[in-house]
Length: 458
Image (cartoon, rainbow, N blue to C red):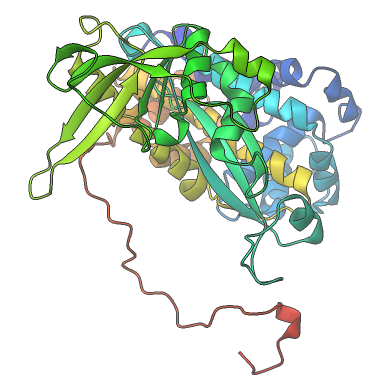
């Protein structure tokens, strides 16, 4: 067993058992919740049962359950209270839903980012990339319940018939490459002015600070985005924008397909003020690298990467190439959120509830990542080598047994051994065609609202 001070899960487990808290307190303790919520805890802390901490713990059990239902979440709370001799609460979900509705949005957002930042700060140096923290980002969309309130704030696609689709939210998430945790997130409409991925990214890119490396695809390779990050001392490693021309015969050449060039400032975009435009430099210096991806049996792919890491001795072409190949992990993290944790469609009927439901999923995701980091550290692995799905399944099954297993070290060892048992393979060149093997059911698509269909018409 590794040193106890390295395992935040072990520490919180001991505190939770001493305090008699709900078993989810071993993942998220009262002190962390109070720190993020601040004065907002007063809204719920006068309640007899559903205080801020208890409501959050029950919320976490709900998003980690298979059916995501309120009934099963409240049932788990009843089971816990009876086991502790506290007396059961009502099995009706009304009081829990009211308490969950009162959770402050800003506080929930602070809690997600605080937990993610705390986990990332504890990462050992050998998890960094050449001494740098790497932040990678990507965007996605989620759907929600088709209610008038959700539709008014998050419209459907323009071509979608009324009543036949779902409101859509666009989400941009920034992850820490070393630990996989969510560091920051932004939400917006799927369509409309300033709703593109890069627009949402600009709302949260302050998380990328001096000496950090931002790793992303070409959607984030705008000249102004690169210049803004570079102005605060951060570095970028992004795929070249498709409209830029490349000529490796120009600039300062470091080697084959590796040189430094000047990118002149483009014309002022409509969304930028004259004052802000004037603050940008006349040009930025970028290193351009051509990466060739050779897969046996497939045509060679060529990817051109732009980076502000200009020193070819400290950051070789192979180093940059290996780092850019890890950009795909952002896609895998989003898959964990949307597919494994079933965040792709949220069932809340009001926009603020949808946003908090999304934040609760990201909070639970970060807490799972925390256990993965503890398990990886104890087994001298990298966090990405530990299976997210296996860790989540193990946590869901083991956490309710905290009252049964008296030995904390034994429980932690069982948990970490189970998480480490299946090591995820590193398969960066695996071909994953976007096709479905399972045939869809032969139902017709909905062409009008459900209420307009007559019996037997479909």
